[in-house]
Image 1 (cartoon, one colour):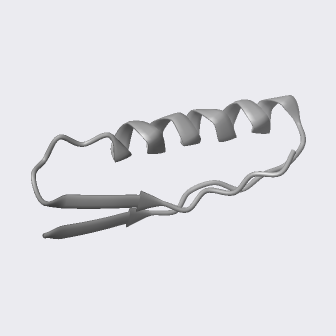
Image 2 (image 1 turned 30 degrees about the vertical axis):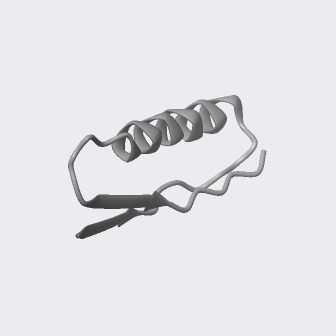
Length: 49
C-alpha cells in the first residue's frame, strides 16, 4: 500500500487570500480523488477567514 500526505496553505482574511486558499483546497481535493489501487491519501487542511 502506498501512503501520501500533503499540507498546504496559510490563511489571511483578504479576498485574494481566501480565493487562493479555496484554490489550494480544490487542488487538494482533486489530488485525494485517486483511482490507483492500494493507494491511501489524506489532506490536513485548515483555513480561518
